[in-house]
Length: 172
Length: 451
Image 1 (cartoon, each protein chain N blue to C red):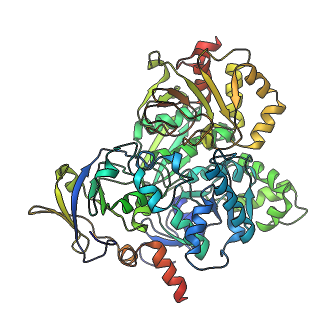
Image 2: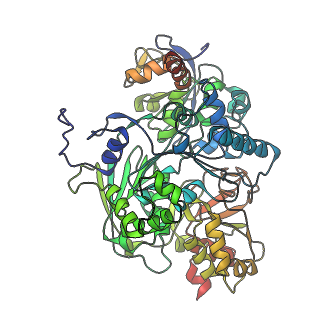
Image 3: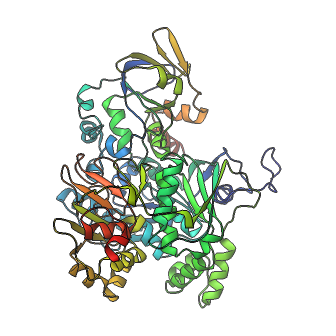
């Protein structure tokens, strides 16, 4: 994956599997919340308290596959930002904490609810995520997910909430 | 409103009514996306990084300065130079933009302070860049957490899209037994329904038991619904709530004026206005789940590391030795909580090798505890006190944990690494259980040390 996620630009990567109720404290520890905010500051701490090896192993386009309630807990946006700027293209889960879900999409990190993919995808599997077709492909099997709403799709295509808002305000 | 699927005469939940008001609509349907205009936009130590995002919009002025509330509470007083610089940036932003409500280091935790200051009123929509914003449901307001980018967009546009959530009704009956608190009620509910038991939902409490709960107790229960995944939580406001707010509005004339009240009004008249503003779900409103809890069936409960829904009765735990006991946070750092601690600890002494850390939720709580003599008694019992604020709750300062240490805490989260090292363990319980455990040096029922 080069550059931000876009409709019509599928990306490929490897699966990192984690469990249920992975909270924002282990995704991005609270002890850094008020001192580290910029992408280059937060990336080295991605998943620090869950999997200290993650930040060193993740490559652009990789995806996280997890269970129920990924990203529960704090509202800290760095939990989404650190993953996005570490190169993660999507988190695929059974469900999401609601603030994480919004933070992720606002930052162009796909938060995809797809229980079938969670059941099937194994650690290290190579997958392709296709936003246009609303599908995750692994080998010759495709796992479909509910398409994002037109509003979310246009926000992702605009480069995220901030860029979209900036353009809207500039246009008056 | 005559549009299909959303007739104005349909029975509605609190969430539907509150979001309809905030969106300027007559009625909204569950699942509908609305552009909501919050009455209050809350941020705290994260105000400076939000301001940095906001500046990308090229605006000179935020569009809702009078509706913005900023508190410094998460790491206060500044523990490091980086935190100090962050605070300095927040102060500069607040001065530059003429922010309506600003509270300095030591005033207390945003949710407690905005309640004490009567900045949030029944029926309001509060959006906060803090996940415990559902807290304001104890006043009959709709509070929801948002991210930093969304807060920046709010400052720039005054509105944000929200989906109208499905609602869960929890009816409370009966009365709490001795040594049982609403923290135990919350841990019982979360243990039964799960840490995602209310994901994306509005949790709406009603029932006869509410009238018998103190205001501090109500706040603790509503606050904890964030740990069940709730978008917002709500408790039907009654005369106790209106009196609490009316008294505070009367001593703050500027605020009263800004919220549509007139100078010279009596407390009764101000309470009338609050009553008129309050929102209540219709009796036949549609809920995706309805639960009834008899408070007399609840026993003191403890959440075990590292999951808030991994709960057990305190008597089922076998000799869990603790290094630290912590009292504080937006969940259980109020006057009633310090009162429970005082009842257990006064005249006794924390066990050797056990640290007792108390961080009051606000300066008002601290001053009242001082005036009542509780602080002196608790200091004599071995407690140490921190500046009103969030304390060590999220591992910033004032009592963080070393590898292998065990803490029992009156806070809301026991995530791995939350209070410091990831090798530490956090148990969550009521203030009375935390205090009793400090005396015993292990997790015990308050009965064990008081009888």
